[in-house]
Length: 319
Ligand code: SF4
Image (cartoon, rainbow, N blue to C red; front, top):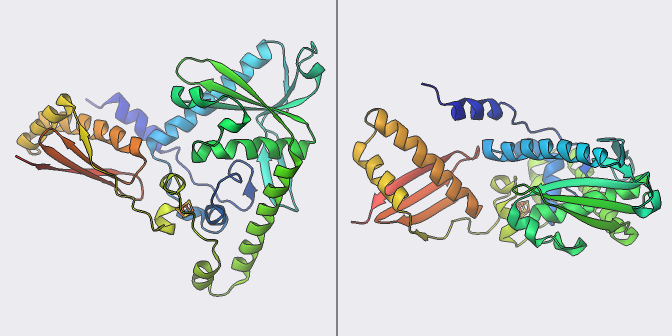
């Protein structure tokens, strides 16, 4: 019988897309690595596409956003210009706002219009969000303030709401940002710098040699690089080999033993293989590396993800 999960995952896999990128995007301009932002413009097609599980997270985020905006509206706020687009020609910076909103009762900001951006997040990340300075602990969080500030700047709106939701409990936090002109000045200068490099690249006849010579320096930051979709193209001089983990997991230990004993024989093997691969993939992805090394009981498990984030694992008995 076909597994329903496999069928749903195959369907979601068809939704995975990499879109051409010809502008600086507000949603990524806050990235700490300038080189990554240049890659986005000149080598967007060479990024590692999201795998099925990341695509599921994106889909879930869109569903949660729609639900939040409905809740917001049902609670009496005027919500308008949802997903409206803005493109600043000079900086070549494009943004889509989640929404503008105002409180017709006048209880929030005396009824003034504000920009609303919605983010759903894991319970752990949610617990770390306390104020405007809380968005620095992960590479993707660092991008959120720049995104909101860009919307506020181009819309000429002084206040921005970052509505954060715990995916697991549905709890919501409101973090308010004030338009920060000095910060936006640094963002616009960053855009200018990227535009200049991209123009030089586009004008060059020998793309490959310009590419190496003109790219901004790499950052020396494992956290940035391990989540960077251009890490295989960039090849930073950082060791991506995952450190060896010692895992006390009797269930995984038994499954590996059965997996190796059955040696690709019959239905029982197929069922164990699928469950074991799913379990190991989940563990491997937590580390954020492209490799996975663990001792599970007597088994040394080595895993490696290819460019499409497909994992392969080998098992060596230490006994
Ligand atoms: S791999 Fe690291 S250095 Fe290279 S572009 Fe990505 S973040 Fe920057």
